[in-house]
Amino acid sequence: MILKLIPFILPLLIAIIAFKFSVNGTVAKLKKSSTELKEPQLIALIQKMSKVLKLQNLKIYIYKIQQINGIASPDGKIYLTAGFLNAYYSGKVTASELSTVVAHELGHLALGHTKKRTIDFAGQTAIRIGLGFVLGRIIPGIGFYLANTLAQLLSSKLSRNDEYAADAYAAALLKKSDIGIDSQISLLNKLDYLVNSNEISQVPWLMSHPSSKDRVAEIVKLEKKWNKKTS
Image 1 (cartoon, helix red, strand yellow):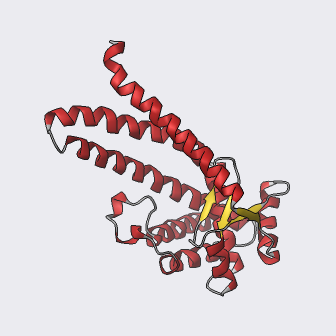
Image 2 (tube, one colour):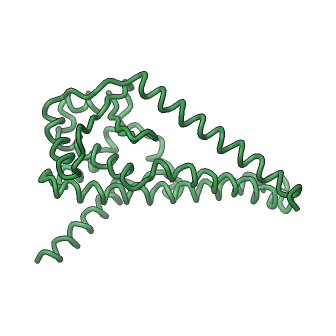
């Protein structure tokens, strides 16, 4: 019985080890290519959030690439890309809008999303290998491609759920920090114009992030729920 499972277990273990090596490489690359954020106006807003969270000495780092993105690294650090900071300096985004990216990444860390990715990756790999083996025998030629597509669907769905959860965490934090969610909504409304992403033209259910429109709708829905409770 154990021998029959080896073709499934061995590739899975190899994939997990490779993933962990990739994570370590990413952390090292981020450290090497980053500097600590020194922008006073943005730091003041971040300090408001850290006070609510009772976090001492919360530092944000600038990753020296021109893409527009925020990153929660596996070692618990938060990065804004140089491209995002340049968008702030050029007046394309405000300090409060940029602070909402930090709030979102804090959500990923607080909700354990970075650690959960290893488990998700293992599950997706198991689907690719196990289902690919079965479907490859039933539908020769396309079975493995079908299994890969199903694994991608699962991966994208889990990723989108994490993004909605991080948005909700950020909205609550921004509200408690007296920054408010208007800046979160305004940034999302302009995000598609700021980011040159291939995902904009992808089939929605294969996207790793929900559309900006859907994210805004969920935040507005959340705000209405809060308003009902306080009225």
